[in-house]
Image (cartoon, helix red, strand yellow):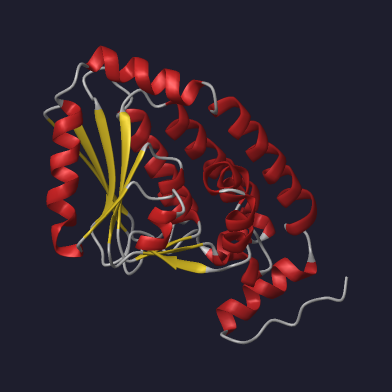
Length: 253
């Protein structure tokens, strides 16, 4: 059993979901399930804003590598898909408060939120291809957010700074790391002070047009992953090489 802590604190219309799985908030299946449970808990008319943040020096270094293996893959992908569905249909406004390493599945969480506030120490990227894998949520939504050329650069494994992510349209605002928590609290409070009826109508209208298309693209990406990447020799080799801290020896296919 992994050491997982996800806390939910609700006050004045703001629900704060805090990730805390040392050292880097790697998202294993258990943590994804708890996060999804927390999101369901926050889907209430009394809550106007949901903030996703981290108690650690990183927002999240991504999905647990071991959970990409065949015995865990289906469960992991199911939780990833459910996470996307929840974030795209949640009634409250969603804010990702990111800092430090924000990689892979952690960066995908941010992509699915309405507002992304990033500390200037944020490193944003999708390194999955280096492990013989790819990030399905990012593959589904990055081209829409930042255009195909930049999307492919990121999907090919490039990491970018918070400023570059803001320029690409992936981050709403970059703030000094020392001011990040204060900025997040201020933005959340300002939004929570708005009409709850209007905010819920806005999230429904703004996400309603793109959520079905994005989830359809995600389903195609997940089906591709399950059919081709998951059972491949390269997927197992990428995981083994990562865990053994060596260079992978890819197949010639």
